[in-house]
Length: 286
Ligand code: HXC
Ligand code: NAP
Picture 1 (tube, rainbow, N blue to C red):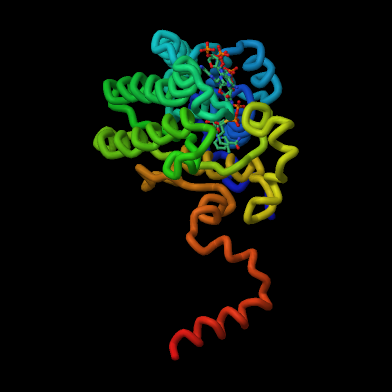
Picture 2 (spheres, rainbow, N blue to C red; picture 1 turned 120 degrees about the vertical axis):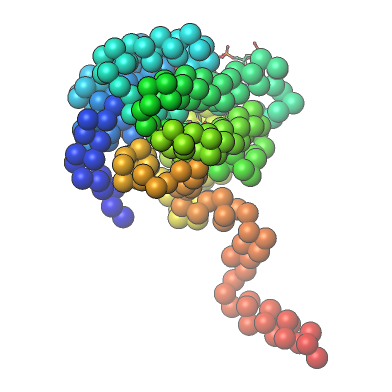
């Protein structure tokens, strides 16, 4: 395994990338690598102090700006301030999310709203307002949306997140088709489990993690490493991926396929038993 950066060091030189949810978790790890590759960053989320701390930690040319992705006025303000500082924005990473584990019947309408609004409305607010700017200014741009594999499988206990991520995936493909004529590309990554405090506190809290060993249940018996995701995201936001549009790339160590295949559970059958099974199957022919 190689958990180091894989792209040439000037891959994102002179590129300005805006990352929603860029102060923590995966947004922070991806941002760290983009800075190493020469990018200017705008990082945004609701907590200014968290953003400031991350900007100081990462170094480089970073503008930390607090705002709520659900509020289109905040989004416009952040875009205006970013354009004033950097003159341009080349890439958008829609990464902010809200999520928590819960049986759906326990949710209030407001609890459903909060997740769908952060994930879906947040993504379309940034995509729409920055997309309009790119189109009006005849400027090419690239968008990268972070979804999950349950955007297409669905999942128990995270129904609002699944519904919203499914919407983001449909938006990704819709804009990829509609805005390619303006030189705008739109792709997505569907990560499997990559440990972050934000996700683990809300999805795998103590009572749940004591019931089963999630990491060992994965086909590769390990979680993703943040640099593995950062490598892919940097590629998908760079000019190296110029011919990729409307794509969703899964990075989950084969997790969802492993859980989906009709006969995959037969892995549990001991190797020795296959001789008996084969005899039984062949026997049916007579
Ligand atoms: C039931 C809950 C709840 C819970 C909140 N609510 N938590 N209901 N179970 N555990 C309800 C509240 O009671 C309220 O409804 C409504 O949701 C809004 O709650 P607030 O606390 O007022 O919302 P807010 O302060 O805006 O916080 C938003 C949040 C929070 C989504 C609830 O968790 C947050 O800030 N999350 C941001 C970061 C995050 O979620 N990161 C994880 C992403 S991981 P009522 O009706 O009572 O007023 C991810 C990974 C996917 O997406 C794949 C992993 C493999
Ligand atoms: P995280 O650290 O909690 O990231 C979520 C970020 O979104 C936080 O920085 C949060 O900051 C920001 N945010 C939330 N609500 C916001 C709002 N209304 N306005 C602006 N920013 C807001 O969790 P993560 O694991 O890194 O998740 C990052 C992305 O990866 C998400 O899209 C998630 O769905 C996806 N993902 C994660 C995993 C995983 O295993 N970790 C797997 C699949 C997909 P504030 O709270 O300060 O606003």
